[in-house]
Amino acid sequence: MKLQKYLKSLYRFLQRENFHLVIFWVVILILVSSVGISLLEPDLPLRNAFWWSIVTLTTVGYGDISPVTLGGRAIAVLIMFFGIGLLGIMSATLATILISKKMKEDKGMKTYAFKNHVILCEWNHRARSILKELRAASQTEEAQVILIADIEEKPVADEALYFVRGVVDEETLEQANLCEAKTVIVLGDDRLEASARDAKVVLTTLTIESMCRDVYTVVELVDSKNRQHCERANADEIIVGSEFSSHLIASAAIHHGISRIVSELLSTQYGNDLYGVKAPKEMIGLPFIDIFIRMKKERQAIVLGIQKGRGGELIANPPVDSILEQDDLLIVIAAKRA
Image (cartoon, rainbow, N blue to C red; front, side):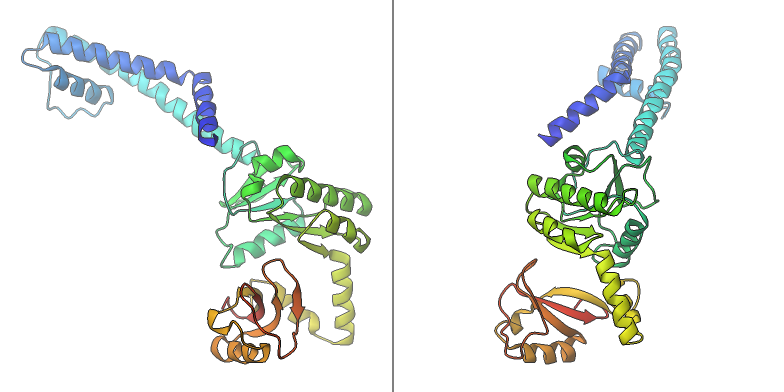
């Protein structure tokens, strides 16, 4: 269905640009000149005349076939002059198609059919930092990211960043191929005051979850009081910016220098990072203390906790006798993904 829709859209565009007329006259010119030169030139079969017409029209001119009669040369002159004009029109039309396609992308008017991509809702300084972090991580450095934002044009020169212009609603989410996305990041609209900003985030989350429950949603809130609304909207992860900042500042005041460690762990651009890695098969069924020691010895990674399946319950600092089960994820600190 998507291919059929794309082909219909392409046909309508070519029709609007009168490209079909250019093709029609090119075909007519080749057929007429092929038949004419075949009749006028002695011992020139139609298939060779057809080859000569195409070579002459495209101004390649191999010289393997040359007209010798007056009528043949007259046809050659006509096809040369008309061919240059038709090829010029064809080249200009193709250039228009490519430029129009690029402009549609930059202006956020295109519909995408990506799979396992990331959708970023709203554009602000935090979105810029998020994009920078995604590009610094090995698993997302070349990932296709679709930005949905009500801004004039694509804000940064990133070849793997694609733009859909408009507010985040069903139409723009369909343009971004929501149901085939891997993750959706919902940021607050900085143009709104705090309560309205959080309300818009909750509404966006509800829209996303009502359209596709399988996509993983990460949402940003200003006020922790609105966390319950996002939970009811089935957001997978909720990050309260002010709450996180307050905890970090308080911890830094009590334990000097801790903010630098947290910054290193949260940034993919330098130092050690936090990773969620699939539990190695040989460690399934082992107690946590054995896993902790083996991961440090064998992979230079420190295990902080266990997540019961992707998106499941997170157990930080589990008891030493906790048994690792199939599909569990290990939350580790490491220089690179283990």
